[in-house]
Length: 152
Image 1 (cartoon, rainbow, N blue to C red):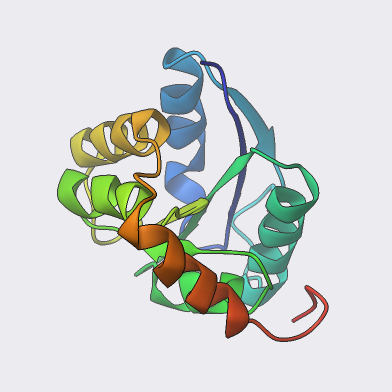
Image 2 (cartoon, rainbow, N blue to C red):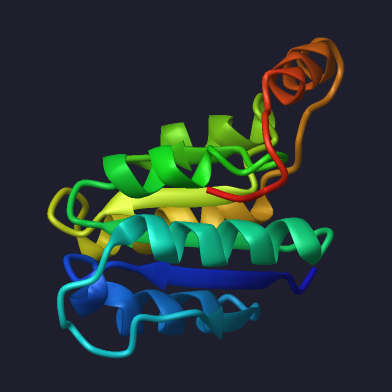
């Protein structure tokens, strides 16, 4: 099934963004690029917010966020109510972020993960459905911890 992915980076993740967009499109999905559009220094929370708010506003869509390590941008995205941004380093973490945590944003570090692993993570993230069952209650508890009005 074709899915929509919103993608954003900071300056440290900018170099890999076009590759990631192409990988998503090769899998048959639609990509919306939220920036930045150059490698000029930017603040990752601004782009995490753009992506997170877009995913929340567009039910059923997903996000991809990239910074140097993936850490800062994932922390920032998780400040938005309803977002479950998962920092992933391999196909195992990408799969279980969807299967058990119903993650809606895939995060990774451009300086941490290679292109082959990135392609595999995107494929697994896009094709894995939330398992539900005992995990539903846990995801609901995560949602109860959310604060604010989707604004960071």
